Length: 297
Image (cartoon, rainbow, N blue to C red; front, side):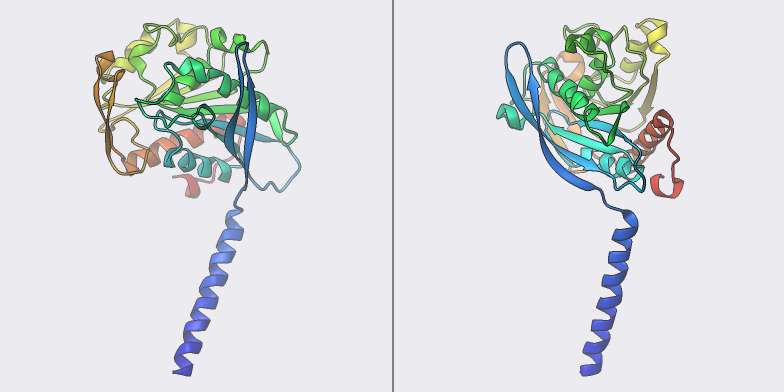
């Protein structure tokens, strides 16, 4: 019996040592929870966020990416991409747009328009730009659904000029941002871009749009703007394919080209991995970083 216990202990010790070595090898990021002041002409508030800072081996400034959640609020989606970006040496700041407003999120408890949360995204950009460890010229943004709208709006001079500052995001990623609404619904203007590249990823089976809606939107904007946008449409992908929680069906007035109805949120891990790969390559090129292909495929 004693020999059995000694064997078990030895196995546990080796396993524990291996696990610790693996954690050390991964160089997990420093994680901070921050409050960022937001000021408009009408009001002021503090927006909370999770600031993840990679452990750098040198003293050079790091690139960073702001992460903006969907109507449902903070879920697995942000962390899914944050971890991949952190491994590349990119800091991330994931905002909670709802907590400061005392709302739960979802289509029944959210602001009337993404424009109401635009100051939060701009405040996050300025917050990061003032950090000593961050390169202010290398701050990107990625958003999902509601957050995807914000990522696209912040790619325009019309909305960024409202900040009264010359500071701009270096690159934009928007996932399933309700393509049919742009340049049709007030508050969804998408033209006169800042010059930063935009990666737009959507699914053919998204209940907000039709399969060709994003193509049509891009074909309708000035050619100079269209050249800045890369569009990837995934077959067999529903809205929020990279939200890896169980399937969910919600009601939303913006669904089905604005006629309203149900939206299916169906996870697809295979497509999520493809979209993550697309994002890591986008930011690697933007920030001139080298990718470890074994880690990010």
